[in-house]
Amino acid sequence: QVQLVESGGGLAQPGGSLRLSCAASGNIFRIHAMGWYRQAPGKQRELVASSPSGGSTNYADSVKGRFTISRDNAKNTVYLQMNTLKPEDTTVYYCNAVITTSRGILNGYWGQGTQVTVSS
Image 1 (cartoon, helix red, strand yellow):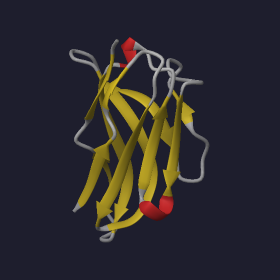
Image 2 (cartoon, rainbow, N blue to C red):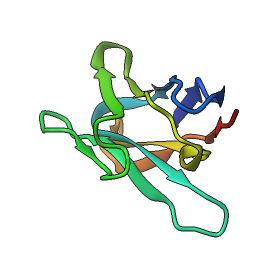
Image 3 (tube, rainbow, N blue to C red):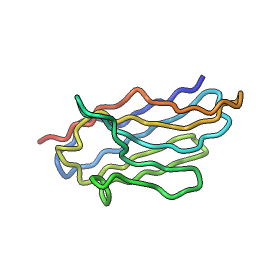
């Protein structure tokens, strides 16, 4: 089994910052892409930022210049540094990882979601 555990969500004021973390654990052979998505009530889940293995990062236009995705491959962890937060960033954020397990199975996995609220 593979688990993704997220942390770091919470309440921030407009213009403030939060840092999300997502650690993968379990029967992992190799982690390929890791990324962050978000989903507002009644809307589709959308990509926020992605970090392919060995490739360049990708950001949604709405967060470019404000959010930064990074990975610590030794810790199987991906981070999302969120700066200059806006009220419209308020929603649940999900970590995603594409992983080959120790049994050679390639699959996508999701974290449980973490709430980010931007409000004064």
